[in-house]
Length: 139
Image (cartoon, rainbow, N blue to C red; front, side, top):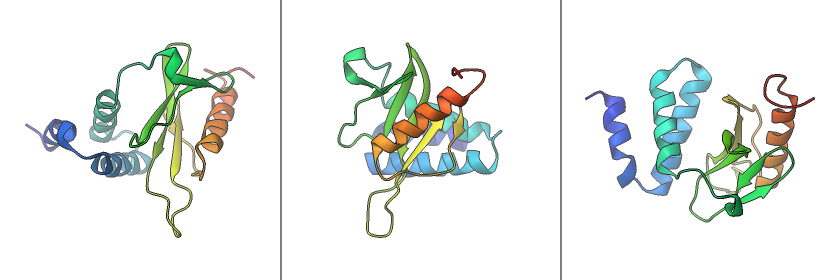
């Protein structure tokens, strides 16, 4: 068993805070090296653990995308275009006097460079990034 396999096997027993830290570390590894297969496997395992496809009633439509509703203790909110998952917002830290912008956005596998204080702002940025993608969005 590889170290990545062992980490993935521990996910169900982790606290939400530990999963957030694991996601933050895996995302940082992908930012540094976009081809990091271990980091991608960890992110995929976290996404799978945090739930299957959301029901339409569990989503908020913001334009081209619909987003999972924000629930306390949940660190990731997926973006859907129809039934397809096309992105996510993830909480990379807790709000504090020093750390105000805690939400990061990933659309079509690309993490936006800025972080956001409010989920609504993160959703809006995700919408704009999706719409600007010449392959997936509409111009």
